Length: 403
Image (cartoon, rainbow, N blue to C red):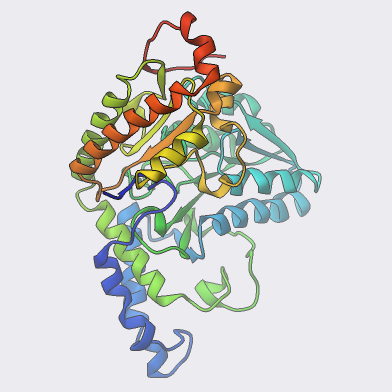
């Protein structure tokens, strides 16, 4: 059996999404900016995709949703344009983010530091979440932007976006959220929360890779990242990727229709898998499952290196990860686990399992059996586990790892 449990890295494209894309490769293929019928033929489908996006996110007509190539582009666009608009050409000099953001945010912030920007990287609590009062305490009159992820790509923990948004609104500071792990997985209502910018990517909710979007509240000014045309109302240059835009609209519609039912089904499978793995001694799951996205488990197994576990799972045709796929070439300790206070040894043992609506009960059964066998084999050859075993109490739990 092949079991794919790395859905926080990417998802399979829903067959219904593939179907709606097909005509726009070789039948309705004109450049949508062309004035002839070959170009205008795609306009109804593009308009439908835009409508699907607005409906799924409950965006207002006064807001903009701009299609991009991916969320990494969207994140870069916000951070670099805020730097240009409010720091280089304004009176601000400060950006606030967290220690546990996606690499596309953290690496961009570090690059901006080289340009003279003061960046504050907020610490997280024992469950890997930044608390609203911490955000408030670091905002100054020089703060141009607060950027906090909506949900963690590694732990699945959902951040208090509504509360942080209210603080930013009160302080008159722009607020950006990387919504990649939230959109299409949990309800995202952009009229219920005050967020100025939200990044998202279709391939995280069963759309294709290579298309994302940026939500912009009230169509507020934001210098383009890409110049060279009047596409997307002059906000993002580049010929529209029609089949992928159509696909993203369909994917978000499918993901958000009856989303509570989808969440309940995924959560039931996730919880059954998590409960079974916690039967193993000295295992730890990061974060309260009630405040996680319903598909995610970040588990650490004392005495089992994450890379070794991945090797065993891969040999069993199970796809999992040790964290963000965008940082998978770096086999250092899991940065999120270090941020929440795990010791270096335990931070090397993290395995992320992330389900989707296509995950089956039989796949969960298979994973449980193979996972337990792999742990037994790896612990039997683990010198570190043998050394600490006499002093361990054998407790397994979904825990808070304290500093």
